[in-house]
Image (tube, rainbow, N blue to C red):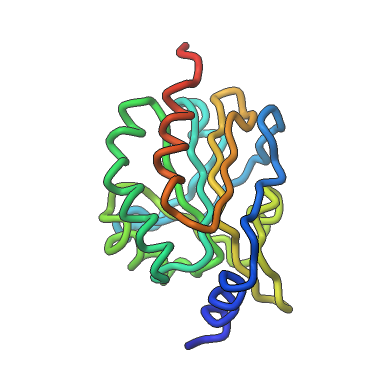
Length: 178
């Protein structure tokens, strides 16, 4: 088991439920990040996505771990529902883009993009860092719904991936329509 995976396992055994620091009404930090959809690299811009409607940004600790893979499968199964509700869906972790190319096609079924944040700039801006050890670190499991106005409309943090899709989809559907 590699060092980061060992840290994730240890923290999940010792940690209590996390909570998102950004709250509804807070301005969502703008970002552009390298992302992949179906193994194809592109640049994801939050500002550009918000011009189309709300964005669901979910942070996950580590690609191909059991909880993160299950969560990605759940988001993939619900991707059409997010689109039908007018939302853009994107996942983000500190994994490198090569790893996320595979994760995008396998765990996400090429249904939504995932972005790489290996230097933790976006993860820290959203107060979503679970741990940082030296130059390494991982994201906590936090999901945000960002309204088209660029403000956090909903935040949900739980290391258990089970309710992230259900809760964020309900939050998107509850947003005022244009």
